[in-house]
Amino acid sequence: MAQSHKFQDLEETGDVLVSFINSSQPEKLIQVKEAHQALFDKHVETKRLVTQILKDMSQLEEAAGQRLMDMEEEKNRREEELQILEDQLRKSSAKSQMTDSELQFLQRELESLRIDDHELEVLRSEVEEDTTEIIPSAVYVAQVYHLITKIKWEYDTPPNVLKGVHYGPDLATPINMDKCSLSPCEVSDQLWSFVSTEW
Image (cartoon, rainbow, N blue to C red):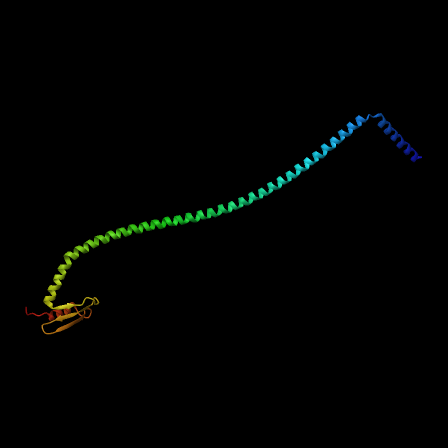
């Protein structure tokens, strides 16, 4: 009974469809079909465009991400270079300060050497003056002493030793006295004993 009722409903529906198709104009159906096809084509084109846009956006996001990573690497590299440059600048600054202090020290040394050079020049002038005035007179006095005493002294001896040779009329007598073991009076007496009183 139920199946008969369902079959009847289906038959009625089929009759409605047949009457609708028979009553419809074919031109109108063609227009609806074309409109439906155009809508479907638009949907396919829109889907293709959206897919392409999403693909392009994905590629752009990937490229932007890669560029961001590259920029981050570049930033890190530049920060390292900047740190190296700052370290070099600090070292150069310390070296420059050291060089400045060394330069000041060398300038002070140079000034000191100039002063010493001036003092040496003054001393040299004094020595030259003494050489031209005092030494010839000292040489003259030494020659007079030699003529009187006939003693030729050795000068490369220790300060406390008197050493030389007395050239007497008949023979030469060596002189070798230690001033530490003799008093000045004894040294003088021994030396005068060599001098002839016959003038």
